[in-house]
Length: 392
Image (cartoon, rainbow, N blue to C red):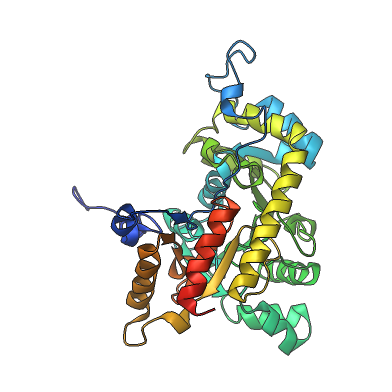
């Protein structure tokens, strides 16, 4: 049996950070920085919902544990505003904690989870930490072409998934609006994915943290297509700009006993989301509509401006652009070295972007840009740097 200093290969093989290979160069930036690499917002939370707005006098017990499944006040607000069934809803430490609890509940060693790529970077590590196998299938960046070629969503989805689903596959991970492409999946595509899940008896993991930021089309809940097998993840981090508060939710399918199993998985890892963050979440749900509307309008305006400036399709939702930079890479270098060299050229001009290979193994010639992580004027200056490097 392995002994100290042995570390499990499934942990040793994970990246410590999406930006670890660039950290030293980022630290040496002299002058203005354009930090467009992290998925966050420049906007302060809504008035009255800062954690500093909550006091022990007005909320006795705010520094104590609350119920592991969620504070009663927040569960009531979720039911009132988002229509969540408290009997099937679990408050978690962000969507990250929620999806980790789901993976810990339904993934056995050697099980495969098919992840539609490009994908949120942490989901593959979540699968691996649960002793599963993350199987990334290029999807969002190829969907429009597949629909044009095959004519129907059923045929396009079948063509894109190919033979990715096998006897060891237990779940399919979907993120719409998508991080990083900004793609919003339509009803026919979601129905086709739901049909695939039923045919192969898979769980659906639906990551819907950007549901409020849909700029074109309409966000549709995956659970409305396959309620009996869909876990829905959501987060106050992205919706209301309180990422540091670590508060989100998982809605569990109506399967007898399943909610309690997910609750046990979450309880034995992070136990509960911070109590004060849950109190802030309840207030945001009830009073944050104006903030949401302002944020949506501001995000759409700068996101569409950035896409136009770079000659890209406008994002349908989310807070990112996924940019193919192959034309600016050194063809004499392997893709990973060429991408690092390009990112370092960006950093020399103060621009920080995320490397595309963090979003799936076939995206080593892409970068991700978050158009909400800095004020709009700074985003414009950062985009101008990227446009210059790409000759656009």
